Image 1 (cartoon, rainbow, N blue to C red):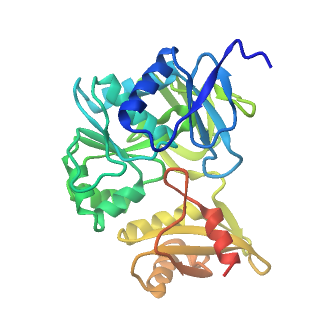
Image 2 (cartoon, one colour):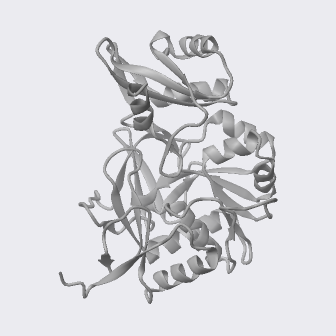
Image 3 (cartoon, helix red, strand yellow):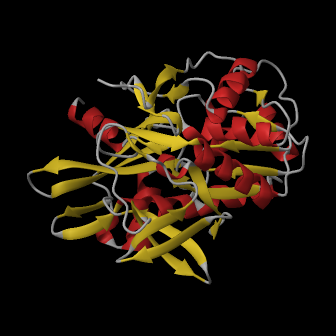
Length: 355
C-alpha cells in the first residue's frame, strides 16, 4: 500500500502524563509529528490532514475509527473557551480517561489558553482548584453522594461541563443547589465532542431537527471514518438522537433506538429513566430489555441506591401508565458503562440472561 499521502498513527497510552500528552498533541496538530490514536483502533496510517483518531462504538453498533483534523479540534477548543468566557492563563483539570475525545478536548482547550492541564486522573489527597473541568454524570453523582474532595473541586470551578451521557434534571438541580456551575454539553466523537452547550450551538456550529432526528453541521465535524464510509447530507451529520428546537435551543429527547415494544405497547427507555430521575434524584437507574416469549421485549430496571420496589412501581404507573412498570427490578452497586459515560444496556441484558 502506498502511504506517501498518509501519516503514521501513534497509539496513546492511557498512562501518559500531561507534559508528554501536551507535547505530542501539539506536534500532531502542527502536522510535524505522528497522528495520535486514542481508544480501540487497528489502523496504522491516516490521511495527512488528520491529527487525531478516536476509536468509538457510541451507544450501539460496530466500533468506528473517527478521523479528526487539526482545524476541527482547535475550532472546537476555541469555541468552547469563547462560550465559557475563558481567559489566557485560565486552567482546565483533566478528570477523564485518555480513551475519548473529551479528554483530548480538555488538553487542547488548556493549550489554547497557554496553560497546562491539571492532571487529576489519579489524584491522591485534595484536588487543586481549576477554572474549568469536564466530567460525566456518573462522576457528578459520586461527588454529590460522598466524594467530598471532588465536590469541593467542582464547586471551585467557574464552569463544569457535563457530557458523555444525558444529565437528568434531578441531578442537575441537586448540583446547582450545591453551588456547582453546570453547563450541559451535547455532541459525539464525530463532532469533536460537545458542540451544543445548554442547548446553544458553539461558534461555527449549526443544528436542526429533521423527521425528529438531530443533525449537526460546522467546522468541528470529523474528516472521515477510517474503517467505513463517511456520509454527510450537504454537510449535515445525522445523529441517532431524537430532538426538538424550543425557543431556538436544542432539546435532546433520547436515542431513536431506545423504544421497545412490550406486550404490543411502545415504551421509551429514556422516558422511564427521566421520570425516575426527577422523582428520585438520589438514585441511578437504567431501563433495558431482553427478549421474552410472553412480552416480546420485557422491560427491566437496574437501580443503584436505596428505595423499595413498591415506590418505583407506584411512581412509574402514576407518571407513565401501567405499561411503564418494569417486569423486573435489579439492585446494583454500580451501572456498567460503555465509553465515557453511557449506560451499557447490552451488558445489563446479558447479566439477566446469566442469572
